[in-house]
Length: 361
Image 1 (spheres, rainbow, N blue to C red):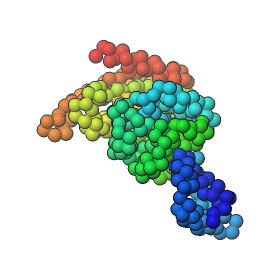
Image 2: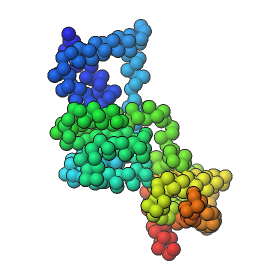
Image 3: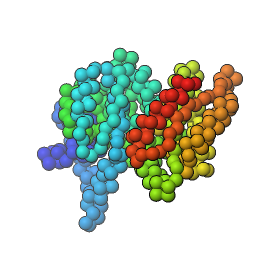
Image 4: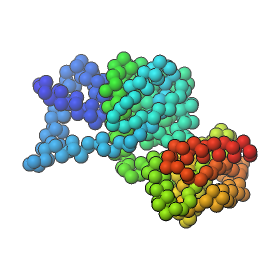
């Protein structure tokens, strides 16, 4: 019979590498299935002897190789899909003041809104309630994974059912946590391990700083790159400009022609922006339909001229996806001179310039 120590190690192993919620569900299940428990624990003892006894002085090499916390980004962007405002507030409180990583939370009430957010946003993780007004429990997992098979999903729901939990894991959820069992430590561990496991599986390292759709740098790189270029420009007494570009009417394009067409427009715009690199301009996708250009050695007038030329080139190119799907895309821009070391101050000024540009158009 399995010993108490082996039982404890077994569930620690499951919690570490397969999620807290799954371990809890398995523990309940195995308590009532003695034969299954014996089989599972025998398998665990075999795995333990195989993985831990890998050589003298290196008994924990397997576990060390799976230590993935170093893969976590500084900021984890969470899309919370939850129609209960009280549960959403409790979830936000649990993620506050975490010393390891910062959680940025986007919250939607419906599955349809989540699909739209995932199509245009940059998220590291989905936290999904199965009881949504426009969702059908496990079908919600399939819909999200059909849209983005890489994003990890943690199910956090009031449905406390072992069979549903096992089905959710089978469909691709990283973890399943009943709301009645939530603790802050459990939630933090589950979310961080879900992100780390997925990033490890996808081989994400330096690529975490790049947008998967357009292959441009993403907003994670912006702080470091701005500091680098601003410092260099100041040291050499050279001008620098900061531009934000917003692809017009992307939501309308998605609604009328579908998200695949919208993605193709984003990629085409990104390719056009990439041509700016020949002038030592750093471009990135900030998120959704917005892009950033850091323009060292460009005065404000020079930067405005370059942005106007780029906008004209975009508007003059017809995008044809089929005989019935042809149109011309446009973009708005806001440009400011970099006169501060503060990225936040420069960014806010640029947002105001972009808004004025949109109003004028």
